[in-house]
Image (tube, rainbow, N blue to C red; front, side, top):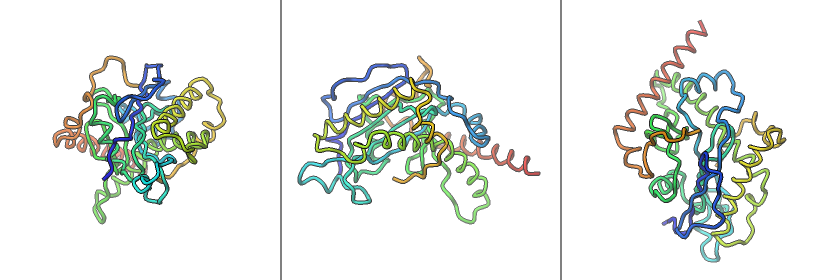
Length: 285
Protein backbone atom coordinates (compact mmCIF):
# COMPACT_ATOMS: atom_id res chain seq x y z
CA UNK A 1 0.00 0.00 0.00
CA UNK A 2 1.30 3.40 -0.96
CA UNK A 3 0.82 6.24 1.48
CA UNK A 4 1.72 9.90 1.64
CA UNK A 5 3.90 9.73 4.72
CA UNK A 6 6.87 10.95 2.72
CA UNK A 7 5.04 13.19 0.26
CA UNK A 8 4.81 16.97 0.18
CA UNK A 9 2.65 19.57 -1.47
CA UNK A 10 4.18 22.61 -3.05
CA UNK A 11 1.67 25.21 -4.06
CA UNK A 12 2.78 27.90 -6.50
CA UNK A 13 -0.23 30.15 -6.41
CA UNK A 14 -0.83 33.44 -8.26
CA UNK A 15 -0.17 36.82 -6.72
CA UNK A 16 2.01 35.41 -3.93
CA UNK A 17 5.70 36.08 -4.51
CA UNK A 18 7.06 34.21 -1.49
CA UNK A 19 8.29 30.63 -1.53
CA UNK A 20 8.92 28.94 1.84
CA UNK A 21 12.60 28.33 2.51
CA UNK A 22 12.04 25.17 4.53
CA UNK A 23 9.86 22.09 4.36
CA UNK A 24 6.59 21.91 6.22
CA UNK A 25 6.52 19.83 9.36
CA UNK A 26 3.62 17.84 7.94
CA UNK A 27 3.96 14.97 5.50
CA UNK A 28 3.19 17.30 2.63
CA UNK A 29 3.80 20.99 2.06
CA UNK A 30 2.65 23.71 -0.33
CA UNK A 31 4.45 26.67 -1.89
CA UNK A 32 3.32 29.49 -4.15
CA UNK A 33 4.86 31.46 -7.03
CA UNK A 34 3.43 34.51 -8.87
CA UNK A 35 1.78 34.19 -12.26
CA UNK A 36 2.19 36.30 -15.34
CA UNK A 37 -0.42 36.89 -18.03
CA UNK A 38 -2.30 33.64 -18.56
CA UNK A 39 -2.78 34.39 -22.25
CA UNK A 40 0.78 35.22 -23.25
CA UNK A 41 0.98 32.20 -25.54
CA UNK A 42 0.09 32.32 -29.23
CA UNK A 43 -2.81 29.94 -29.95
CA UNK A 44 -3.83 28.15 -33.11
CA UNK A 45 -7.31 28.66 -34.55
CA UNK A 46 -8.50 25.39 -33.00
CA UNK A 47 -7.09 26.35 -29.62
CA UNK A 48 -8.66 29.81 -29.79
CA UNK A 49 -12.07 28.29 -30.50
CA UNK A 50 -11.82 26.10 -27.44
CA UNK A 51 -10.39 28.92 -25.36
CA UNK A 52 -13.19 31.34 -26.23
CA UNK A 53 -15.79 28.66 -25.56
CA UNK A 54 -14.07 27.92 -22.25
CA UNK A 55 -13.06 31.38 -21.07
CA UNK A 56 -13.19 30.16 -17.48
CA UNK A 57 -10.42 27.63 -18.02
CA UNK A 58 -7.55 28.67 -15.73
CA UNK A 59 -4.93 26.11 -16.75
CA UNK A 60 -4.06 22.42 -16.88
CA UNK A 61 -3.15 19.71 -14.38
CA UNK A 62 -1.20 16.49 -14.85
CA UNK A 63 1.30 14.24 -13.13
CA UNK A 64 4.89 13.54 -14.08
CA UNK A 65 7.52 11.15 -12.80
CA UNK A 66 10.67 12.72 -11.40
CA UNK A 67 13.78 10.62 -10.73
CA UNK A 68 14.10 9.66 -7.05
CA UNK A 69 16.68 8.14 -4.75
CA UNK A 70 14.78 5.70 -2.54
CA UNK A 71 15.91 4.63 0.92
CA UNK A 72 17.45 1.17 1.12
CA UNK A 73 14.79 -1.51 1.42
CA UNK A 74 11.98 0.77 0.17
CA UNK A 75 12.69 0.84 -3.55
CA UNK A 76 9.69 -1.30 -4.57
CA UNK A 77 7.12 1.34 -3.66
CA UNK A 78 9.08 3.96 -5.64
CA UNK A 79 9.13 1.94 -8.87
CA UNK A 80 6.79 3.23 -11.55
CA UNK A 81 5.19 1.19 -14.33
CA UNK A 82 8.51 1.22 -16.21
CA UNK A 83 10.30 -0.08 -13.11
CA UNK A 84 12.21 3.20 -12.74
CA UNK A 85 12.65 4.63 -9.24
CA UNK A 86 10.66 7.88 -9.24
CA UNK A 87 8.39 10.17 -7.32
CA UNK A 88 5.01 11.02 -8.83
CA UNK A 89 4.54 14.80 -8.89
CA UNK A 90 1.23 16.52 -9.66
CA UNK A 91 1.48 20.01 -11.15
CA UNK A 92 -0.88 22.72 -12.31
CA UNK A 93 0.14 25.42 -14.77
CA UNK A 94 -1.35 28.39 -16.59
CA UNK A 95 -1.27 29.04 -20.34
CA UNK A 96 1.91 31.08 -20.05
CA UNK A 97 3.82 27.90 -19.11
CA UNK A 98 4.19 28.86 -15.45
CA UNK A 99 3.58 26.37 -12.66
CA UNK A 100 0.86 27.38 -10.22
CA UNK A 101 0.90 24.33 -7.95
CA UNK A 102 3.20 21.39 -7.22
CA UNK A 103 2.35 18.36 -5.08
CA UNK A 104 5.54 16.33 -4.79
CA UNK A 105 6.97 13.34 -3.00
CA UNK A 106 4.48 10.57 -3.76
CA UNK A 107 6.12 7.24 -4.49
CA UNK A 108 6.36 6.33 -8.16
CA UNK A 109 3.96 3.40 -7.86
CA UNK A 110 1.07 5.75 -6.97
CA UNK A 111 -1.32 6.62 -9.80
CA UNK A 112 -2.17 10.20 -10.76
CA UNK A 113 -5.73 10.15 -9.41
CA UNK A 114 -4.51 9.01 -5.99
CA UNK A 115 -1.97 11.83 -5.86
CA UNK A 116 -4.68 14.36 -6.76
CA UNK A 117 -7.00 12.93 -4.12
CA UNK A 118 -4.32 13.54 -1.52
CA UNK A 119 -3.62 17.08 -2.72
CA UNK A 120 -7.29 18.09 -2.76
CA UNK A 121 -8.24 16.29 0.42
CA UNK A 122 -6.03 18.29 2.77
CA UNK A 123 -6.71 22.01 3.23
CA UNK A 124 -3.18 22.50 4.57
CA UNK A 125 -1.78 21.71 1.12
CA UNK A 126 -3.39 24.91 -0.18
CA UNK A 127 -4.53 23.65 -3.57
CA UNK A 128 -5.41 26.75 -5.66
CA UNK A 129 -9.11 26.09 -6.24
CA UNK A 130 -10.26 28.22 -9.18
CA UNK A 131 -13.07 30.78 -8.89
CA UNK A 132 -16.53 29.21 -8.86
CA UNK A 133 -17.49 28.30 -12.43
CA UNK A 134 -13.85 28.05 -13.57
CA UNK A 135 -11.84 24.87 -13.99
CA UNK A 136 -8.63 23.10 -14.99
CA UNK A 137 -8.18 20.87 -18.04
CA UNK A 138 -7.16 17.34 -17.04
CA UNK A 139 -6.61 14.08 -18.91
CA UNK A 140 -8.85 11.02 -18.85
CA UNK A 141 -7.04 9.59 -15.84
CA UNK A 142 -8.80 12.11 -13.61
CA UNK A 143 -12.47 12.29 -12.64
CA UNK A 144 -14.77 15.00 -13.97
CA UNK A 145 -15.78 17.56 -11.35
CA UNK A 146 -16.88 21.15 -10.84
CA UNK A 147 -13.27 22.38 -11.21
CA UNK A 148 -11.87 19.66 -13.50
CA UNK A 149 -12.71 19.05 -17.16
CA UNK A 150 -11.38 15.84 -18.74
CA UNK A 151 -11.94 14.74 -22.37
CA UNK A 152 -14.82 12.51 -23.41
CA UNK A 153 -14.40 8.79 -22.99
CA UNK A 154 -14.76 7.13 -26.38
CA UNK A 155 -17.80 4.96 -27.11
CA UNK A 156 -16.94 2.75 -30.07
CA UNK A 157 -19.40 2.71 -32.97
CA UNK A 158 -21.44 5.47 -31.39
CA UNK A 159 -22.68 8.31 -33.61
CA UNK A 160 -21.61 10.81 -30.94
CA UNK A 161 -18.00 9.67 -31.18
CA UNK A 162 -17.03 11.92 -34.09
CA UNK A 163 -18.06 15.14 -32.39
CA UNK A 164 -16.53 13.93 -29.14
CA UNK A 165 -13.28 13.24 -30.97
CA UNK A 166 -13.23 16.81 -32.27
CA UNK A 167 -13.66 18.14 -28.74
CA UNK A 168 -10.97 15.80 -27.43
CA UNK A 169 -8.51 16.91 -30.09
CA UNK A 170 -8.96 20.57 -29.21
CA UNK A 171 -9.00 19.82 -25.50
CA UNK A 172 -5.67 18.02 -25.90
CA UNK A 173 -4.14 20.87 -27.88
CA UNK A 174 -4.76 23.22 -24.96
CA UNK A 175 -3.94 20.77 -22.19
CA UNK A 176 -0.59 20.07 -23.85
CA UNK A 177 0.76 23.21 -22.17
CA UNK A 178 1.42 21.19 -19.00
CA UNK A 179 3.46 18.64 -20.96
CA UNK A 180 5.52 21.48 -22.46
CA UNK A 181 6.13 22.80 -18.96
CA UNK A 182 7.41 19.39 -17.90
CA UNK A 183 9.60 19.23 -21.01
CA UNK A 184 11.25 22.59 -20.27
CA UNK A 185 11.63 21.76 -16.58
CA UNK A 186 13.40 18.43 -17.12
CA UNK A 187 15.55 19.72 -19.98
CA UNK A 188 16.74 22.67 -17.92
CA UNK A 189 17.35 20.78 -14.67
CA UNK A 190 19.01 17.39 -15.42
CA UNK A 191 18.98 16.50 -11.72
CA UNK A 192 15.24 15.82 -12.11
CA UNK A 193 16.05 12.94 -14.44
CA UNK A 194 18.95 11.57 -12.39
CA UNK A 195 18.41 12.36 -8.72
CA UNK A 196 21.33 12.36 -6.29
CA UNK A 197 21.26 10.49 -3.00
CA UNK A 198 19.58 13.21 -0.98
CA UNK A 199 17.05 12.71 1.79
CA UNK A 200 13.42 12.33 0.70
CA UNK A 201 12.54 15.74 2.16
CA UNK A 202 15.37 17.41 0.24
CA UNK A 203 14.30 15.68 -2.98
CA UNK A 204 10.82 17.13 -2.54
CA UNK A 205 12.24 20.61 -2.02
CA UNK A 206 14.45 20.25 -5.10
CA UNK A 207 11.36 19.79 -7.25
CA UNK A 208 9.81 22.88 -5.65
CA UNK A 209 12.94 24.95 -6.18
CA UNK A 210 13.25 23.93 -9.83
CA UNK A 211 9.63 24.86 -10.50
CA UNK A 212 10.12 28.23 -8.81
CA UNK A 213 13.23 28.92 -10.90
CA UNK A 214 11.33 27.83 -14.01
CA UNK A 215 8.69 30.49 -13.25
CA UNK A 216 11.29 33.15 -12.49
CA UNK A 217 12.99 32.61 -15.85
CA UNK A 218 9.67 32.67 -17.65
CA UNK A 219 8.69 35.94 -16.00
CA UNK A 220 11.95 37.83 -16.42
CA UNK A 221 13.46 36.38 -19.60
CA UNK A 222 10.78 36.29 -22.25
CA UNK A 223 13.34 35.47 -24.96
CA UNK A 224 14.63 32.35 -23.21
CA UNK A 225 15.61 29.90 -25.94
CA UNK A 226 14.42 26.79 -24.12
CA UNK A 227 10.89 28.14 -23.73
CA UNK A 228 10.95 29.24 -27.36
CA UNK A 229 11.83 25.71 -28.51
CA UNK A 230 9.16 24.00 -26.41
CA UNK A 231 6.32 26.50 -26.92
CA UNK A 232 5.47 25.26 -30.38
CA UNK A 233 6.22 21.58 -29.83
CA UNK A 234 3.83 18.66 -29.60
CA UNK A 235 4.53 16.56 -26.55
CA UNK A 236 2.83 13.16 -26.19
CA UNK A 237 1.54 12.38 -22.70
CA UNK A 238 4.08 9.76 -21.82
CA UNK A 239 4.07 9.13 -18.35
CA UNK A 240 -5.04 33.94 -13.41
CA UNK A 241 -7.35 33.38 -10.71
CA UNK A 242 -8.98 36.77 -9.91
CA UNK A 243 -8.14 38.11 -6.46
CA UNK A 244 -11.05 37.82 -4.05
CA UNK A 245 -13.19 35.61 -6.30
CA UNK A 246 -15.39 33.00 -4.67
CA UNK A 247 -13.65 29.62 -4.74
CA UNK A 248 -15.01 26.17 -5.49
CA UNK A 249 -13.91 24.81 -2.15
CA UNK A 250 -11.37 25.07 0.61
CA UNK A 251 -9.50 21.86 -0.08
CA UNK A 252 -12.13 19.16 0.27
CA UNK A 253 -13.36 16.97 -2.58
CA UNK A 254 -16.99 16.38 -1.62
CA UNK A 255 -18.33 19.54 -3.24
CA UNK A 256 -16.14 19.26 -6.34
CA UNK A 257 -16.94 15.62 -7.13
CA UNK A 258 -20.47 14.99 -5.92
CA UNK A 259 -23.05 13.68 -8.41
CA UNK A 260 -24.58 17.10 -8.99
CA UNK A 261 -21.22 18.73 -9.74
CA UNK A 262 -20.17 15.94 -12.09
CA UNK A 263 -23.49 16.04 -13.94
CA UNK A 264 -23.30 19.82 -14.36
CA UNK A 265 -19.75 19.70 -15.73
CA UNK A 266 -20.66 16.82 -18.06
CA UNK A 267 -23.58 18.85 -19.45
CA UNK A 268 -21.29 21.86 -19.86
CA UNK A 269 -18.79 19.72 -21.77
CA UNK A 270 -21.60 18.41 -24.00
CA UNK A 271 -22.68 21.97 -24.77
CA UNK A 272 -19.15 22.96 -25.78
CA UNK A 273 -18.87 19.80 -27.88
CA UNK A 274 -22.14 20.54 -29.71
CA UNK A 275 -21.08 24.14 -30.41
CA UNK A 276 -17.73 22.99 -31.78
CA UNK A 277 -19.34 20.39 -33.98
CA UNK A 278 -21.90 22.86 -35.35
CA UNK A 279 -19.11 25.30 -36.17
CA UNK A 280 -17.05 22.56 -37.81
CA UNK A 281 -19.96 21.35 -39.97
CA UNK A 282 -20.89 24.92 -40.87
CA UNK A 283 -17.36 25.76 -42.01
CA UNK A 284 -17.08 22.52 -43.98
CA UNK A 285 -20.20 23.20 -46.06
